[in-house]
Length: 563
Image (cartoon, rainbow, N blue to C red; front, top):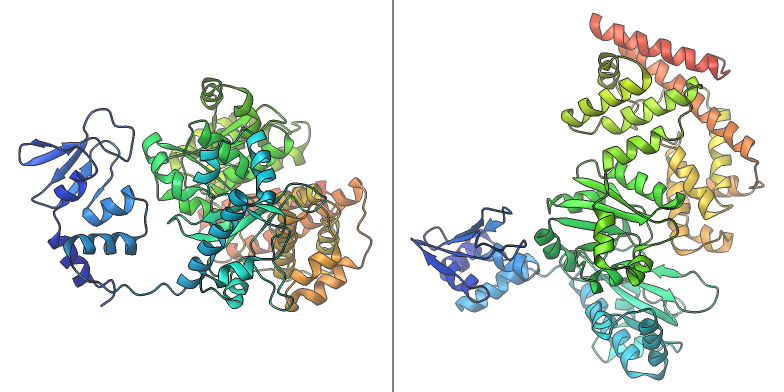
């Protein structure tokens, strides 16, 4: 019986939680229980109680608690199955745990990581890379702590892993070897193993140290690796985060290395992609304050804004460093005290979003005012009632309107992806989307700007192509058709070829016109949708819906859109 409740109960009944915890922590008898310093937060007075009668532990400060199995799992930062096996061995019980269907892939990545580390520390090529890392300020213990390695110029990976009973097929499965050519994915790159929250290596990132190739390339997405669901260093950072009651989210690996080396162990990185709702769900489990730590320039603020929107279920804050400086740069030249002083000035995610939306608003422009209002309301829809009320008062003061009118607006049906698409002859709108997608290939920066401004795409295949373009720019800095088009699934290739055969340059005014066209479609779709809702609405709801319809009609007229 693999992982059955009976097996788990047998193991828990066979061990004494006081002995299990007492092996790693100093416990003192207090009445019928034991107390000790909690290892899951910065505890100075014993706040953890261990009950031999109930066979549980509980910290009355940070809330950590559970049985012996939970303690081993959290204290040693190991998966559930490993913790169960460890306790079973302690009790002399033999358990058979079902093999993970991806166990071979985890094992292959582990063997490959050991090979890359060997190359780094035991070859002539590796010596130069170690020197580079030392010059960047990384100590030997930091290099080893993160398992950094090196992929050499000569293709020897297959030969090396075969000695460990791994095969070419194993390497193909994890994306490290091309199926047909047998060429290795990584050559002459600093290798950074990426593990999941349970400490299992799921992929790699390779950093080029010289030449004109993409600075970083990652293992391709696979059944065990999805960049949008993995945060680099989470397996190491989660215990430190519980103790510090906070977690920093940064943009790069070097930022993590520098922060950990400087004593800030509670940090993770997003690995060249945006912070996603999947990332937020991953962090929600830890119940700590999350700080987005970005460069204070325009790109950093844009990344922070997008992260804040996706962190609506977290206790989130935004910390901006001086413009042009990332955490690696800052901590290499400033003290930890100076860093903490900047952290102390962090804004809540809600305040940051509000100010970023307010800052560009032109209060002489009704369109600008409406964009500000819709942006704030769109953000607040997913927030708590208390936060909504607080920012409705701010918004009402800025717009010189009543809080009640804003409450009515947020209670009205929102424009969401799952709304029925109203039949409006979409020829010019589809063309506008195609042109915007085409413009995204002109530069990485332009692609990110368009992504920020396009909340909803009319056609699902266009949204899929947009995501593929953004994923492409995570690896490459400039668009090349021969690199991008092979990543497009067969079902999207015809549409992609139709889009990318047109000239990609458009002026700023032409691009602005395209956004106006898309906004026209969204307004008309919304208007038709509200009209359908009004047919079955109550009298009170009809008034709110009619009011929004009027506002949309006025906006369409101001924009010069024909109805």
